[in-house]
Image (cartoon, rainbow, N blue to C red; front, side, top):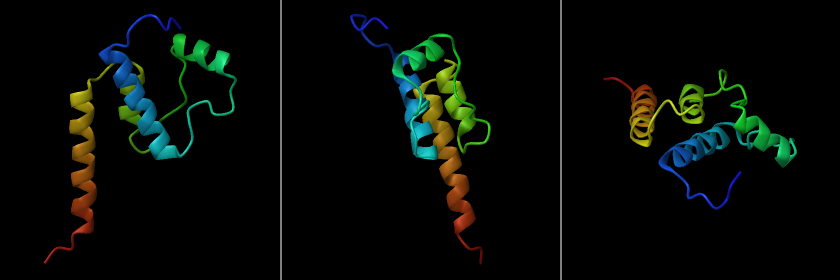
Length: 91
């Protein structure tokens, strides 16, 4: 990784996906993997399986540059509204 290159919006969205992964699982991706192997995996587009994680599709999209921060915000808001609607008893 070249630390002299300034981060991009895509880098931020990637980081957002990683943050969501941590929030949903309680662990960092590749927690037990040496950092040089983690960097290699990320550079090769090899990421942890997110299929069984809440918000896994959002994480996948962030890691594979298939979404934007605005779209992630909209998706999370939609999920939040769905969750909150289930908690409100109907009269």
